[in-house]
Amino acid sequence: MYRLNLPPFEPKIRKKEASGDSEIFDPLRRRYVALTPEEWVRQHFVHYLISIKKYPASLIANEAGIKLNSLTRRCDTVVYNTRLEPVMIVEYKEPRVKITQGVFDQVVQYNSVLKVPFIVVTNGLIHYCCRMDYEKMGYEYLTDIPTWGEEDLQG
Image (cartoon, rainbow, N blue to C red; front, side, top):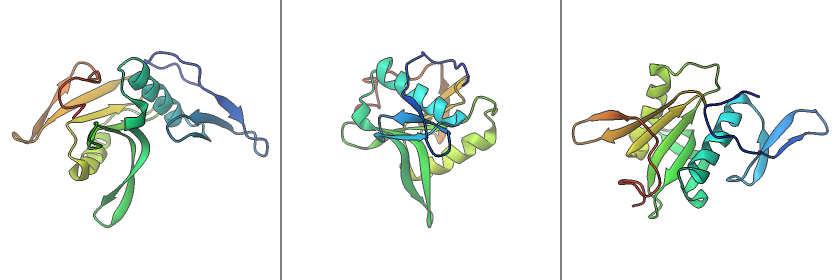
C-alpha cells in the first residue's frame, strides 16, 4: 500500500479465501472491509485521531449516513462531541487523487445537513482542515487538525 503522511500503525489485514482480495479491520465498524487505497487512508487517519489527537473512538463513526434532500449519502467519517452532536466531517481520497474544489464542494453539501465546526479533507499525503464561521458565512484554514478538548470539539 501507499506510504502516507500519517503516523504508521499495525493494521489487521487478511485475505479473503474465496477471492484472495485483501481486507483491513475497521475497529469502529468492528468488521473487516475491502482494503482500497481510500480505506487505507481512512484507517490511518482514524488511528491518528485516536492515538495522537486523543479523540475518543466511541465518538467517531465511519460511513455515517445522512439525508441530503431525498437521498441518503454517507460521510466518510463523522466525529461527535460528548452530547452526540456532529463536530467534524472527514472526507478521504486515495493518495493519487488531488484534492480539488470539487472534493470540498462534496463535503460542503454534507455540511449543509450537519453544520459542523470543522471540515477535514485528506488524501493521506495532504490534509486540509477548516474551521467554519457561520456568523460570517465563511471559513478559515487551520495549520493543524485540532486536538480533542480544544474549543468547539467536546461540547
